[in-house]
Image (cartoon, rainbow over all chains, first blue to last red; front, side, top):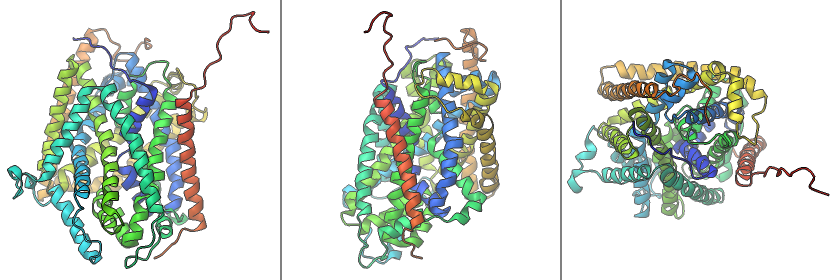
Length: 540
Length: 47
C-alpha cells in the first residue's frame, strides 16, 4: 500500500470555516424561514433552540471527537472510524452510509449550485424577464415557467434537446459544466489549498453580502401599487409567536429536523474533516464555533431577509405558498418576483443568488473529500488517483440527475433517502457509539484533549440519554410523516415511480461499490496491523 | 391577514438574534484571540 503524507488543515480558523461552510447551504436562507413561519413564528424558536442544545451541539461534539480519534489511529473515512468506535465490522459497514451521504448529495447538489450561478448570470445580464408591473398572476406564470425551463422538469433528457442552443444543449448544461469544473479544480488542490482557501474567502463574502441585503430589506418602503405591506408586517409574519403551535408534535419535529439537517451532523463530513486535526487541537471550541456560525447565517440572515422581502412585495398568501413548496419554491419561484419589483432588483437578485451559489459551493466542495479519503485509505491509491476516481464517480451521478429531470424525481429521491433519511441513521449510530459502546466518560475525555473549553457536565447525561431518545423520536416521527409517500412513489406504476426505481438502482450500485471497497480496505488495514476494531488506545 | 410585528414578536426576534450573535462573537473571540497559558517560571524567580 502506498503510504502518503497525511493532509492537514492550515489553521484552526480554516477548519472551522470549512465545517461551517459545509453546513451553511440553501436551507439556511430558504428552508429555515419557511419552517418558522409555518410552525408558530417566534414560538418556533423555543423547540428550535432546545433541539440545538439537546441534539445538534452534542452530536456535533461527538462527531468531532470521533473523527479526531479515528485520525490518530490513521483513519480518515467514516467506515474505518465508525468501525473503531463501534468496535467491530457492523460499525464499519454502517459507516459506508457516511461516505454515501456526501457523495450521493453531491450528485444533485452541483446541479442546484449551477441553477444559482445561472440565476446570477441572468440577473447580471438584465434579469429573468419578469415584469414587476404586470399582474401578479402573470409574474407567477413567468417565474414558474423560467424555473421549469432551467430545471428541464418537463421531460427526461429535455436539457439536451434544447432548440436554438449550441449543440442543442440548454445553457444550464454549460453552467453545470463550469460549476462542476470549479468543484473538481478545488478538490484537486486538496484540503488546505482548495477547500480551506475557498471557505476562508467565501464565508466572509457571504456574510458581508448578506448584511448589505439585510440592511436594504429592513429599509424597504411599502411599494405603491403592490401589497401595501411593510417590513414590520413581514417581520411580524415570521416572528409573532403563536403559542398554540407548541402543543403540536409536528412543530417540535420540524424544529428538530431543521436543526439536524442544517448543522450537517451525521453527514459524514465533520467526522472526516476532524480526522485531520491533532490531539492538541480544541475540538470542543471548534465544534461550537462552526455550529454558531451556521446559526448566525440561519437565524440572523435567513430569519430576516427572505420572508420579510417576500411579504412586502408579493404578500402573505404567495409567501406562504412559496414556503410550503419548500426550499426550491421560495428561492427560485417566489423571490424572483420580489426582485422584479424591488428598486435595483437585478443587482440585489444577482447578489442574493451569489450568496446562494457561495453557500452551495462551500458545501459541495466538502462532499467529495470524505470519499477521496476513503478511497486512499481503503485501496492504497495516491491522491491524484483518488481525486480522479471520485470526480468521475461524482460526474456520473451528476449526469444521471441532469438527464432524469422529469418532475425532478431523481433529485428528490436522492435528497429524501440519502440526504435526509440516511443522515438520521448515521447520527443514530454515532451517538450510540459515543455514548454507549465507547462510553460517554471516555468519549468526553477524548473530546477534552487539547480543549481550553470544557463541555458542561450536564452534557454527560444529555449525550447518553437525552440525545439518543430525542433522535429516536425524530426518526419515528419522520418515518410516520414522510416515509409512506416516498414508498408509494417508489412502488407505484407511474412514470415518476419508474424514474424513482431507476434512481434507486443507481444508488444501489453506488452502495455496492462502497461496501466492496470497505471489505478490501478492512483486509488491508488488518494486514498492516492497524487497530480497525478499536481495541487499543489511540497513539499520538 | 395583516399582522404587524407585535411586542411578543419583537421579544422573540431580539432574543433569538441576540443569542446567536453573542454566541458567534464569543466563539470567534476565543478562536482568534486564545488565552495564553501562564509561562512556567522556574522556582526562585520573582520578587
